[in-house]
Length: 105
Image 1: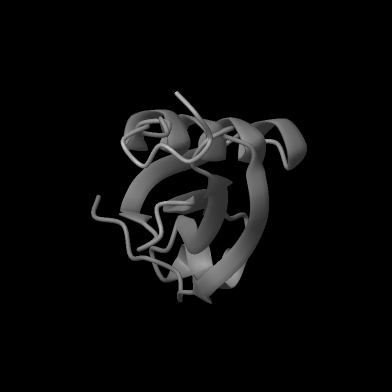
Image 2: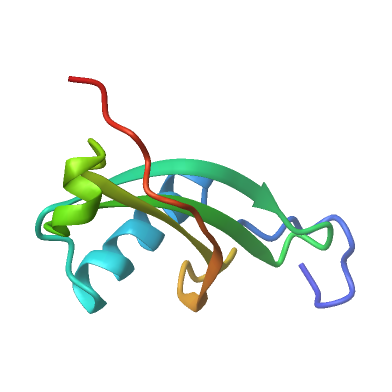
């Protein structure tokens, strides 16, 4: 195929691989000891160049005021921009910060 052949399809990584790359980046760079990580959102940019992966990061708190209210974990969301071809993490941003999440029991 020549470089002008429009029929050549460029391969991109799967959504699953993009999510794993985001999680691995977070755990390698920030550390995840004591954190629970959940997949919250996955989207591919319209131009198919980037995956946007949002992870929920639950971290335990030892704040006595929060514990007295039955709040055992803090929840934050991180959004990762992943290169859809290479799988490299381009950026990690705080999507928004939530208030502590009440725990039952």
